[in-house]
Every structure is written in structure tokens, then in C-alpha cells.
Length: 107
Ligand SMILES: [Zn+2]
Figure (cartoon, rainbow, N blue to C red):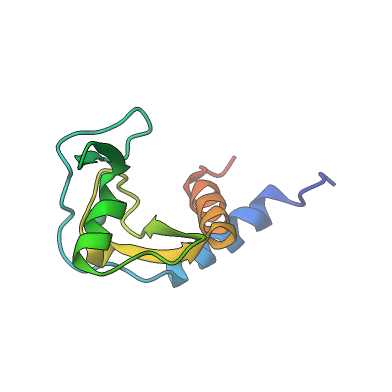
């Protein structure tokens, strides 16, 4: 048995985790200028920001310290605040893994 358990079970669990996540309404709003990581980049008052964080702070409010904005639509270029959810770094990592596993084709 591998250290991380049966990949088949891990994938099935991941599909369940991904299916339980909120489904965003509406279309993605793609930011026109992307950085090397695929996230939108925006320059505001001479400083460079991740566009989705900047848009969130302008439209919704400040992001609590330590929280990250998860793209529920999995589109890093998207700045539609309805597609974003503030989550802890741990939760964001858990979702990233679950999405990765869920995408794996069965062997
Ligand atoms: Zn989106």
C-alpha cells in the first residue's frame, strides 16, 4: 500500500469534495493582463497586485489577514467576485489537491 493510500479511493474522495464546493453563478470576467502564474496582474498607485484580490478589495472589502481567495471557477484570470471565496491557506491547498485528483483519469 502506498504511503498516501489507494489512488482510486483518493480520486473518488476528491470527486466528492469538489462536487460539494459552491458552484459560482454567471460568466467569468477575464482580466486582460496576466502574470507568469496565470493570475491577472493589476497596477494600482504604482504597486503590482493580483487582479482578483484588488477587485475583491474594491468591490467587497478588505480580505482578512491570512485568507486567500479561492477561484471556485478554477479560472485564475477571472475577477468575478461571485466566483471567489475567501478561505484559509489550508483549505485552499485541500481544494487544490482535491481538484487535481478529481481530474486524474482512471488507470
Ligand atoms: Zn470565474
